[in-house]
Amino acid sequence: LHGPARASGFGEIPNADVVITSYPLLARDIETLAKHDWHVVVLDEAQHIKNPKAITAQSACRLKAANRLCLSGTPMENHLGELWSLMRFLMPGFLGDEKSFNTRLRKPIERDHSSDAQLALNRRVSPLLLRRTKDQVATELPNKTVLIHHVDLTKKQTDLYESVRAAMDKRVRDAIADKGLAKSHIIVLDALLKLRQICCHPRLLKHDAESAKLDYLTNELLPTLLEEGRRILLFSQFTSMLALIEAHLDKEKIPFLKLTGETKDRAKLVKTFQAGAVPVFLISLKAGGTGLNLTAADTVIHYDPWWNPAAENQATDRAHRIGQTKPVFVHKLVCRGSIEDRILELQKHKSALVAALLSEEMAKLKIDAETLSNLLAPLDLT
Image (tube, rainbow, N blue to C red; front, side, top):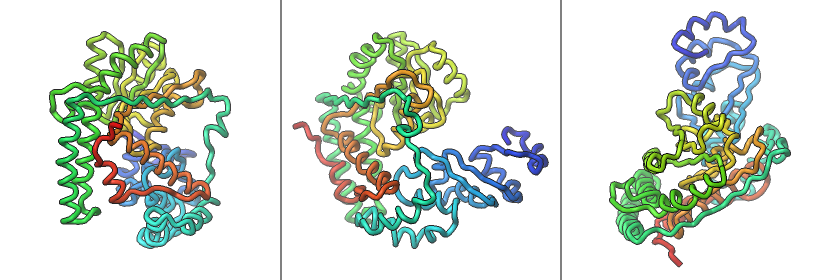
């Protein structure tokens, strides 16, 4: 079911063996789809229903089905509430209502690091989880090597970073003192965003200064990789940063493709890259982190680190997936001693939470006032 004329096919649903639709269209057509009794409902990329209050998740839960399946490479990206949302679709009430789940399990695990609560949740959900890693099912995959490139900020970047950091640190502390941490999230996110943008390029904050990271990328890393004949996927969360990289590639007459949320014909770009016609593919993490097969690439560059390691790994897996015949090298660019270094540490904790869910290890995620203070700490230039 797709396209503006899809309503003409609604009458054929009872005669079809399989009905395929998208998440946006599920929400639009839910009044029709909810009238049918389905034998099986399968949600591919089921993390699309991770927010239980979103219309997509609510629509999925309205479908009547004898059997339900969720398929996902990232069943939990940020917190245990996302797991609850998936389980609500699969078996409503299995983990209790959201409030009781938060009280009995989520808060004890995420805030108090309770091993008893962790074990209880693991035992509850493990009979319903079938986990398969690439190491288990794709043993023929070539190696993946991750390389961290630490870059020192320029003098102007350092001064700007510290100036913005000190100002935002005061704003955040004042907001928390006035409203508490939970109600200060907008100011907190704004502070963290500004520091991340400075690390990428001061121009993202309308400051006329050079970027040490962009200089390293364009004058050292990219020329070396292109000289070696590498096929490159370059990810950033900021489309404005991709535009700055694009300007450099244009200047140097380096062929490239670009995919963002504004891109219309994704399939055409993928086909062009897979055919080997273009060596560099610029991709926004949100728009191209899932659903693309880009095994023609043997190199992935993450220009800026993201809080969620699962999102980064999904992006890397556009190249490191079944069908890949060459070793894949992943380059992560990180400004030394900055918020980006601390994001890498936070990524490890998030990975620990996911690992704890799928095994019986203790979760180590801790996002609280102490973590925030660390993220807003001065540059560590030692």
